[in-house]
Length: 295
Ligand SMILES: O=c1[nH]c(=O)c2[nH]c(=O)[nH]c2[nH]1
Image 1 (tube, rainbow, N blue to C red):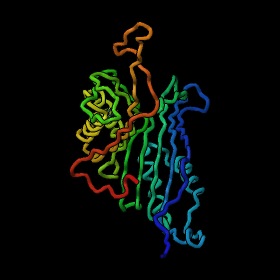
Image 2 (image 1 turned 180 degrees about the vertical axis):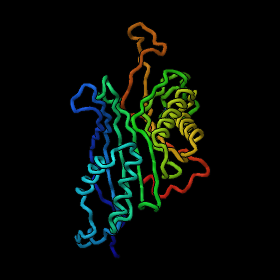
Image 3 (image 1 turned 60 degrees about the horizontal axis):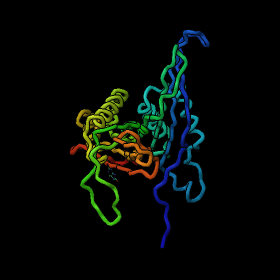
Image 4 (image 1 turned 120 degrees about the vertical axis):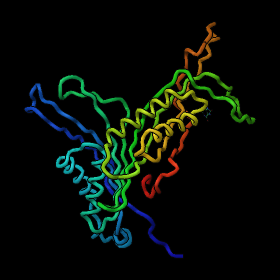
């Protein structure tokens, strides 16, 4: 039996960068700043057999250099959108290093709203914008997957769940009116990595996810998931596939009878675990092959 090296990749994970774009004199009352707060993970692959088999590092661009590149590019090019910044980095590593043939760059962005004036900010909830870039270099195969995490939503009515399997362990009662709540993780694949209006595309996808959630009379979270994915793809031609992961954040009616009170869908216990976890992919029937887009 022989033993061989399988697929491998390496890189610097979670370089946290805050890029400030300044206008106005430092410290001036009218200074107007823009901030981009991101978490960048780079992962490279290529001719790394010797590094693993013999310890010869001649092909290895240190992960420390990768981290430095992220900071240097933030200064040199600024960070407009995480998709463009990811493509720039991914192409750079492949195009500048003969031993690197593929780059994966994942970026999470934390958003900040202005408080007042031009340079005071408040973190905008827990929602995170995401981008996952794969590149074989400029002119080679490339993919862009955009997305979001922790988009927390709730419908206080318009949700039912019944008609499900009953086995010997089933105690759940069918219900005609319940709270439906979830924290959406969604990732959507662009048909092409060619320069798109990434901000507009993201704004629209998020808008359609929210509106489909609100406007679907739900018979299950699974049905809501499909409607959310379907709406995004129906409205946005630049997208061909969306993957959704949605925990069912259960809200249980509290029994108030011991206190002589009824509970007409007014007082709930918000349980944090366990939770149902509903996950699914929705895609157009002409979606191009995904290759490594989701890896
Ligand atoms: O929307 C739901 N889907 C399920 O599959 C499920 N299972 C469960 O216990 N509650 C729910 N709700």
